[in-house]
Image (tube, rainbow, N blue to C red; front, side, top):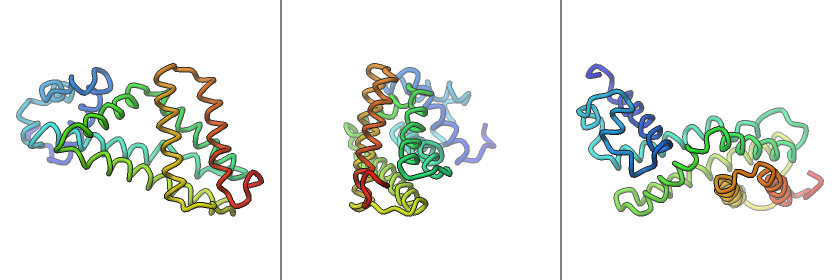
Length: 202
């Protein structure tokens, strides 16, 4: 392991930490548990990171990057209209949640942990800024691709969408009711479409 570049070592440890947290929770993600998951000696952790909190910061950044590459991809697909694109995007998001609920729960746990940890206090803000930025880019691209316009600033609409997806995620994690989640997605689609300049006709 000593020949692995530091950046690769950090990435492997971040992935291992996410696996431990998804399976066993934040409190179980000790440095020993993380290196065991990664198949590395304990010294590898101290070579790559100065603290566990520094590693947890990388874990959140890793998941944010993954969300950017996968979660909302269907908004950019060749859909017939903007409503279809928004609906498909919400459904794609729910599919990601249902495919790996432990990972989604881990992210909520990590955010709460960061909010209670002084050395990580700035991380949730960066995390949610990243989410809003991603959603804003896709909302702008979706509107441009379907010759539509939003009637409020894109960053405000992105914040609204993020609130919706967080709420649907927590609700589904609590009851695992797919039918209820699907109904909420339809309501969410209409709520977003109400902010097109053409309203329900977009």
